[in-house]
Image (cartoon, rainbow, N blue to C red; front, side, top):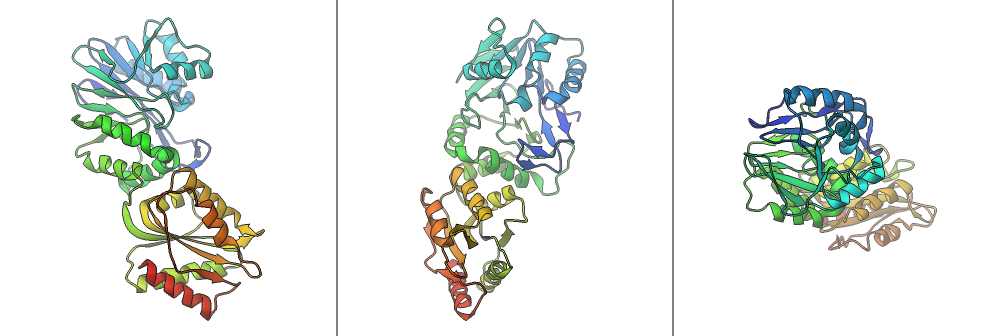
Length: 387
């Protein structure tokens, strides 16, 4: 992609259409972008490298964009290998360049690549600045967004924020997502950054008062125009607020009876005036889409079978994904099925004990194998309560 961000700032990243799982977990059917940027001024700064497999292509793109000039600095905002794997190749090609990064980043660079470049480095921290000529780079520490060494960079001249992994999304640069930025950015955020809401909030406070005309993340599109919606969503997500008023029913089923209960509940919710009801079969949907849905909406129904005297394995995995990411500030209802020893509700509630500010529905639903008049009445009562 030939992207000019400002007169002096160019995009030099690459698209990956070969990857199936990002970080070995997240399905990326529309590819992945590894973003890198070039700032041309009296001094020349390169912002991050790209994933190892694309090093040759990236160095060629960089060489063309330089137009015969030589980089003075390589700014490493994030030492994760999809952004730092070509540091060694860059430093071999441009031995006069200085690496700019946090103290913690240099430790990680040494661990990954065998050198901390002690003779060619500049350690930066919060409020450190770097003068390139017309451009002044202001560094902001962003620990645990989502690694401890992360820095962001604000160019006060062109009002561009280089945001490391924040504001990123799944999908290659050349993929025109019909659902827009938010859908895959939300799945990306809650999958990768979601646990660190407090740290994201701290960074958002550091950005207050700064005029931002473009956000250049390390993944996904360059964000320009009215940025208020992106910033608003990051504030909601990182404060564990409710983005969409609606009810998610997440269920597992063995012989189909618990699925029948989930579908019956959804029908009753709609009859009671709930306009947004999402029903997810956890065994057959993308787990991280399901996590995204739970964090997006205001209410969550967990509907599952008893298994080995506890919670069905896939439901247990789903709840673990929620709790490790700080699930909170929601209404939760529990529906259990058990032919001869129902115990799933007790197990699910125990798993959620550490979550903050959860309100549990008062209506209890217990299915003993198949739906009957008693369990349907319980589901009717739950639908009215949630509505």
